[in-house]
Every structure is written in structure tokens, then in C-alpha cells.
Length: 301
Image (cartoon, rainbow, N blue to C red):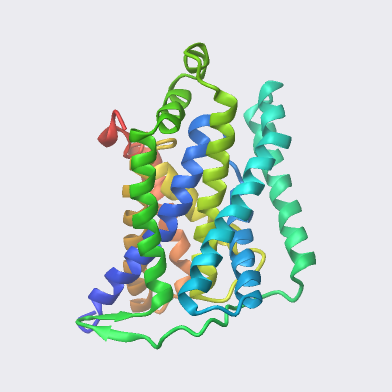
């Protein structure tokens, strides 16, 4: 391991953690208000990748404009689907007092529907972006490639934006109040229905962005979102379910653990496909020792 490029592994860890951050923050936002794990979250990610893929093939703009439009469209399309799924499916189920298992099964069913609609629209299995990315270049000990850097920049912007939204705006304070005590929030005059719709839109939009960045980095398929959903759940549990700031810390912990783990796996001649197991080793340890995750470190947030 003496010749291992640790600086590059650190960069990959930040990149992996950034993708997990976008998706896990999105997942924990909806859990904080709706109180169930949304398995259709995986397909919101996949939809973001395919939306960006469609837009990239449709437009003939300079690369920076194409990327910006792809990000915006992935956010809006996935966000709109998330909003509609709450309005049409999960909102009515919650108002009828559906159990956790009913909501989970409903989200799985929605996910499968979205996946097979995607397969019908984009047949042919694996797809790849053909954007004219600049060649990778060396900066100090790092090898820089634009698709690796985009999720890091997006996660930074999204993290700061979410922090400002939750702490400096009326809708952000309404989201926090509704997550903490929905009955009291409603009695205080907060339109909790609008808060929930806004949160589902933001959550699905962030998931779509995460999926887009995964798709831009490598080839992708209709099962792309599902393939990383379990790692995203591991991040969410480690961070503390419903904890925004815990999810941020956990995303980079898991990202670092997975990328360092790949190096260790290689030393033993094992395939890098086992990296997902690393997330679950961490998850099981956390559930056994500290089931509340990192929540206590971020009390009041």
C-alpha cells in the first residue's frame, strides 16, 4: 500500500460523499415530515440521470450551458414527480392513517412503475453521456476530471442553500416546525400541506441531481438508483434518521470508508463490487452500538 495514491482516493471519497450527501439529505427531508422510508427515492435518482441524458442529446449549446440546463431539468422533472407522488399517493395514504408497512410497499410499487416507464421510454439498457468533457488534468497530487468535480460543487451549493433555507426563510422555519410537531405547527397557522408538498419537491429534485451526477460520471441503467439506494439508507441511518446535519457528516464518512475499503479489498484480491458491503458493516455496527446515529452531535439542528 506504500504506492497508493491517497490524495486521489481522498478526492474520490469527497466525490462519493457529495453524491451521497445530495441523496441522503433529500431522503431525510421527506422522512422528517412523512415518517416513512421512501423506496421510490431510487427511481427519482434514475429519472434525473435519464432526464439529463435526454436534454444533453437534445441541445446543441456550449458545454457549460448544457450542463446547467441538464442540472436544472433533472431537478425540476424529478422534483415535480416527487410532488405529484405525494399529492396523489402518499398524502392520501397518510391522511387515511396507513401503517408504515403500507407506505413502504406503496413506495416500492411506485418505484417499480417509474422504472418500467423509464425502460419503455429509453429502451436499450445501459446509456452513457457523450458530452465533450475536457481531458483530465493533473493539479498537484490530484487528477481532476470535470464529472468528478461537479457533484462536489453541487453538494457545496446545495448544502449552503439548504442551511440558509432552513434557518433564514419562513418556509424553512415552517419545515422545521412541521417536522418537530405537525399538530402544533398547524395550530400556529402553518400551512402544513404546502410545507409537505414543498419538501417532497425539494427532496425529489435533489435526488434527481444526485442521479444526474452519477450518470455523468459513468454509464447508467434503469437500476442505477436502486444500486446505490442501500448505501444512501446507510448514510441516513448513520447520520440519524431525520437529521439534516447528521446526514452531511455521515455522507462523507461513508464515502471515505468505501473508497479506502476498495484499496483494502484490492490488497486481498477481492473485487471492488464488495464496496457496498462496507456501508452495511458500518450500518450494523452503528445500529448495535449507537442506534440514534450522529443525531446527538447535532442537537438543535
